[in-house]
Length: 209
Image (cartoon, rainbow, N blue to C red; front, side, top):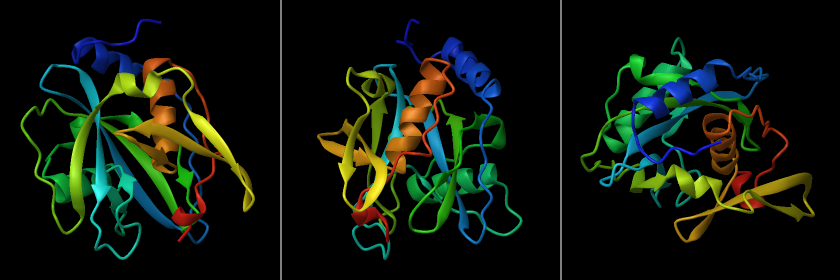
């Protein structure tokens, strides 16, 4: 399959169609806290299709300095789509309407007690984004092609768990689950139209809290 080289209507239609045909797997909360993340597809200055990745602020009580997708808890009575868009605006100043939503990926249950719903959204924003310093230390546009390099994803075994820990090298560092799991499934569904599951991938021990 030819991978997209331009951020255009063909990519948008392909992403929407692949997500529409994807039989996503929700996870019942069962006492865990529901959350949503925004998986934003947008262009860079060269017109390449990218996704947004943030680094969380150092002063946050939980998961400070970790690499993440914009997102947070779903408030009572709020849909996952609205929660993802609200958090996106609060964290990086990108305001989108619900029509920007292309679809959902599988829920992912974290060791820290959340069930995360990834919401894939489309934005034609090319201007620089403004991260909220209370929540985000930096925001990055990463080319989608970076997810489709040979040998990805990586997995490592750890003695604390029987689940393989997923890793994706990006931005001169290693991205781990839950973010790495979501990004890997994004690649599989959006770029290749494959219903690859990621719930079996684990997180490193330092992300369990």
